[in-house]
Length: 234
Image 1 (spheres, rainbow, N blue to C red):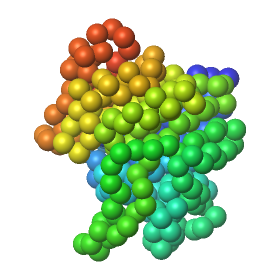
Image 2 (spheres, helix red, strand yellow):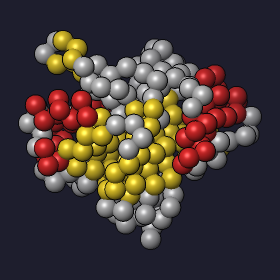
Image 3 (cartoon, rainbow, N blue to C red):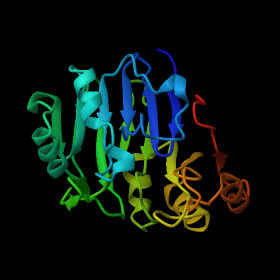
Image 4 (cartoon, rainbow, N blue to C red):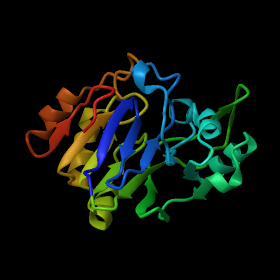
């Protein structure tokens, strides 16, 4: 098996390649995402899409991507799956679930976990109910386990995510204003105890001012902190 590859597209959007070559897109905001490098905005191969919540900067291109990749399976909370079905995404391509549930995506176990945020979907100029926000723990075919926190503040039950799933790497928001900033993210690292932390959801807009350098300073060598540039593969 090959190693797992994690490509940071920008903001909270990642493309993962599993050891057996499956492609997983997390939070499909690509075309309108100012952080995504132009050469990565066209997605050639896609097997699965994970959606953490319904805000436009996380779900913005879901419908268009579903049309362009008719075999891709979309995983999200139940309410968001109903909304996507109403936008023309076929039911056979939707896995609506909820926190604590685990789905098998071709040998990749994906568990939906809590996030402390909101989840309104902007639809025709109005906000509609999108269910609860979430994060995902992804256990790949080779046993490597990755946690994508979604948009969230720190919450003490992150310690349970460590206890139950032992993620080896954690993708966590650090920008502040809409999510936790570096101070809160450092506490999240203490709860999660993941050896490697990847900073996301920062500097896409000026208000998201938290920096990987500040989180690294607060980590004080207790965790490996990575701040990849958009387009960089880990």
